[in-house]
Image (tube, rainbow, N blue to C red; front, side, top):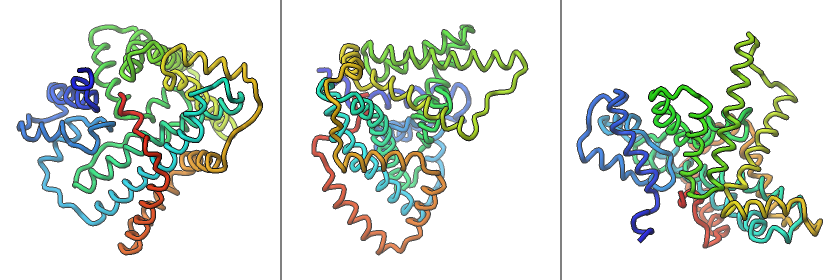
Length: 355
């Protein structure tokens, strides 16, 4: 019965449905749509299962435009779709099979360093998994003549926890900001710290009805609240905002990435008990072995390079692919399809399907 009443993607559909009356009320959407357009908006399949969460004010106006599908849009969509499949199948699934699943399956059997590496590998896995799906959704949407919103902006380059949530799953975090936080604030709940905790605990519960997700949201809400207090304190003292440069910038990025990674232990563990068992295993390891295969090392390094290299490199590569003669691009795509099949684990699924 639960599988029937809670189908895959129901939370994304509900969120999108909520945006329609609220965007009309706030006049972000200028006029009502027909039942046919509304049905298309809710059931638009590319992003239906794992986002991005598309707002009515973003999608509905596109239905009133007579957009002609161009060859460049089709080529760009194909390149985005292939890129998403590479992220998902070659990187995310390989990290899961080679590192993350063994570590979380039996943490006491591995060394401390391997368990820590597995945590960072999971951060890259979940990013490549959801980021890969998003690329596929945006790519397929482009091939159908529709634009979908950007969902990620190099989240592990964040210089604060608040900045991380501005970069991670942007359509979800901005949904909670604009439709829940602002709603609470308009109810005259002027305690910004309490409001932040409520919003982030709701974000945690949205990911799963377990105490580990509640604690996950509480920690992130507390950290964002602390950052706001510190920034406000500097502002009250007429001090300039903190700007990180050079080596301090690198250290700050590493610090925030590490905090995000270790809180993901609550995200990956089945419950609080499992998360605690993994955490204690880091300090009570009975072995010093590092069972990392060459393919695991290569894929983990590739994930890091793909994320931390300058975004200009990616844009130039995508532009080059878009300008490549069709017969060459077609051959490359066929080759990539065979590579993807070779990497297929047969049991893999998108992580965010469970949400």
